[in-house]
Image (tube, rainbow, N blue to C red; front, side, top):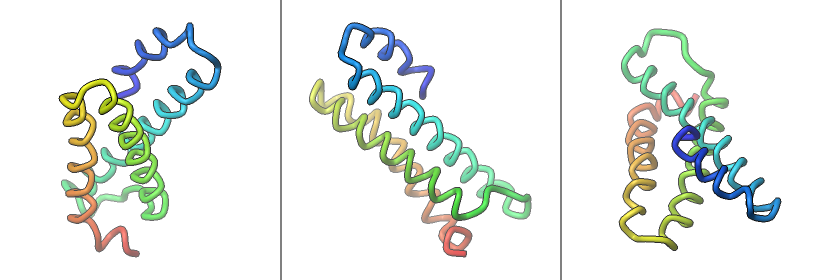
Length: 106
């Protein structure tokens, strides 16, 4: 996701420093959340294989939800059609979290 939004960071070079920092934080949180989603998919496909610890996985998922929620908010101010693009990862992650709730509750 960071690769997709890195042009937005380059376009925002003419903005103030806080806008650049916010975009950079959202990209980092999105990358961490993406790693959490990959770990959840791996846990779903290979339940017996060693995976990320539950506490760390929760932090990864929370950071991804924060990044995607913020991106959804900003996208909805531009166009409501963009909202579906940013809400979809939250829904997929929610489905995987529900599927792996026993692992995450330990």
